Image 1 (cartoon, one colour):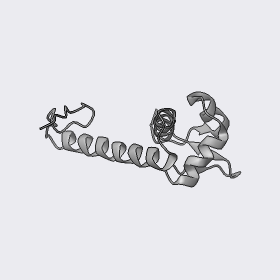
Image 2 (cartoon, helix red, strand yellow):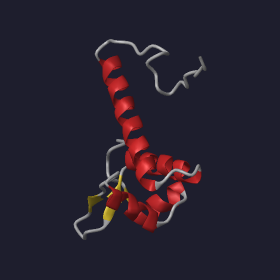
Image 3 (tube, one colour):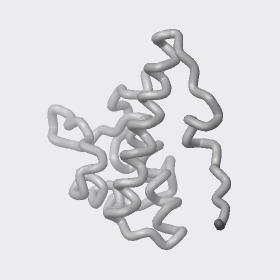
Image 4 (tube, helix red, strand yellow):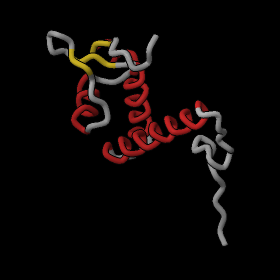
Length: 108
């Protein structure tokens, strides 16, 4: 199934990731996700959008504000897309460049 296909109604989407419909609407208002609309005007979400929403929910549970969580998820998503593009072009992403691998910080 295409991860970008708007396949899920708001109710089903909320159920799938364990959030409320109001939470999904708040992400639309924050500009993180913009669901497609059915002919009847109902929101339709893709699997990719639900993955973003679930990642925001985790960050909110960790104490981040909604705007910060949306920004973090947006940047992570863009970085992941850039890494995918590099690989598609035949390049590699080294461990130092891979943002999914935590870096060590040292004093001094």
